[in-house]
Picture 1: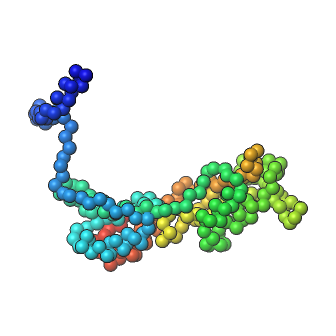
Picture 2: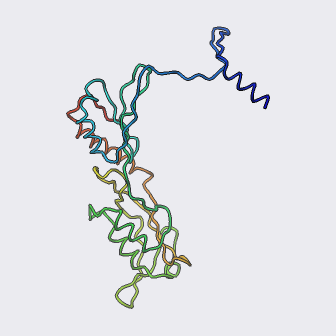
Length: 243
C-alpha cells in the first residue's frame, strides 16, 4: 500500500522537462491537445448513401479537399485534408452488409445448396457454373464419393438420375462462381473456386468451396467501387477517390 501511495503522489506531480546533449526529455507520458475540433464519423452501409451525403451536405463540403478511400471490398472511408494538427478527420465510414457463406468449410449438402442459391448470382450464364454445382450438390448420393474415387485433383461420385438409377459423374472443379462479396451497387467479381465433396458419418454428403484465385477478386472489387464513386461524384470537384 505504501508503494502504491508513493506512486500516486508522484503521478500527481508536474512533469519535469530536461535538455541533455541537445535533446529534450520528459519524465511522464503527455498527450497533445489538438487545435482542431473533430466530428464523430457517420456510419453507413451502402455506397449510394455516401454519394447522397456528399452531394446533399453542401455546407460540409464547400471548402477544402476530401479523400474517399476504398479500404477493402467491403469498406470505404471519407477523409478531410490535413488540418492544423496534421491529422485527417474521418467524416464517414461505409461498411457493406454481405451475406455470410462458409467458404473453406465442409457443410451439409442441403445447407450448401440453400447457401449457393441465395448468396450467389446467376449473371453471365455462359461462364457461371452455379447451375452445375447446384445440380451436383443436390443429387449426389451418400456413400458414393469414396467408392468412385478421389485423385486429389479431381473427384467422382454418383448422382441420382430419375427415380432409381445412378450416373457416375466427375465433380465440376475448378468452377466459376459469382458470390455476393462487395457492395451491391457494383458488379460482383466472378472467380475460380475448388469444389469438393466428401461423406460424413453424421451429416452424410458434405460440400465445400475453396477460393482459388489468390485474392485477385479483391482488386477487381475495389476497382469497381472506385469506378462507381468516380462516376457518381464526377460533378464534385474537391473529392478525390483512391483505392
